[in-house]
Image 1 (cartoon, one colour):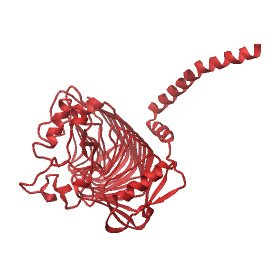
Image 2 (image 1 turned 135 degrees about the vertical axis):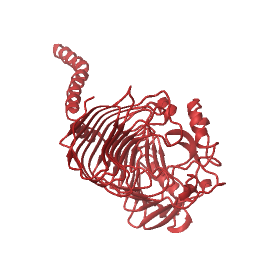
Image 3 (image 1 turned 60 degrees about the vertical axis):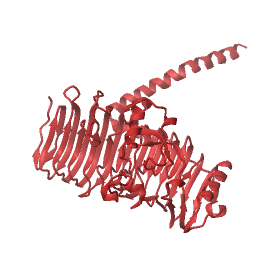
Image 4 (image 1 turned 90 degrees about the vertical axis):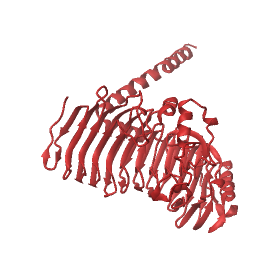
Length: 479
């Protein structure tokens, strides 16, 4: 009896004490991680769970699919996905061939696997895309389904050496952007018409519920390509993606995402390669981005909608990637109102006369947002058009973009970066007097050629350590 009471007392102590011990250890780990942010990155990597699937295959041909590039296979994909998830999961296999389809909606425990020489061709007819809860340029709405879509799913993947072809090049998807270089002409409807994109932004500003922001037919807002919405534990591996209507890889409100070995080659309007938004614990590695917009653009919602959701994007890791064409290699913003922190970029190659910047943060006083703790190391940069590092609180591409939400940009570090040609400036940073760009460090950075060393306005504590631009050692600025 005494032994039992002693055992019971000890168990009670452990129930109370264990969480305290755990929290204490966690606090020490966090303190060490702050001292060395790269240790924090390692901890994030170790914390991300891996997808696991049953060893069962569901070949789409067994569900009626025909890979002739002409037969419509939406129902076959739907049946295969439903059978797979209903039986505990596995692989939905797309074999050799070209498979025309409407949107594919994934379910729990499903790995959409494209074999070698398999290609999925997505319809360019808007009527094939149902209205779902999605997002357009950082604002939630009811709009055309993404080409591949998963909402509230866990343990999901897209894998294999095949091709996902959005077929958007020179079709209505690109024309809807309103860009003349994409086929738009005066008189053709586009997202820029007064009743379209700006109406959506106005709805968000007025607090209209998402369920009542109904767009789709007649509103000309293009769908995302691959969107994981409120998902957990996702893998996208080895596939090639071409000819996207809009943003290409878009995890939104999702956690624990790995993008590995993916090739994105799509030069359409707003063809960002990967846009994590309101998302956490993301690894993007071993990928190639050749895009019509930013290669990687980390997002956190636009204006009032971003502040409504209020989920920062954080713990975003980019490793061993190659960036070719694009507006920026790794970009944060401009849809950034909920903030971004803990971004790690390492061992990447960026090089193209059509790549504007290597690292960029873009926001303004309408967006707001706190952007902090961005760590970059070991970059090989060939040519960029404008500058290597751009930190801008006055981003303005849609007309007037000023408001009462002064942003914050602080704690940005570049280390071991080699650049052959930087264009206008080595570094470009602009802040507000009341909110300067602060605590920026460039260590062991060599920029062989730039028109000017830098453009710096309203900055504080800019540290240039063993950094050379045009063979000139750059001095730190502490003001």
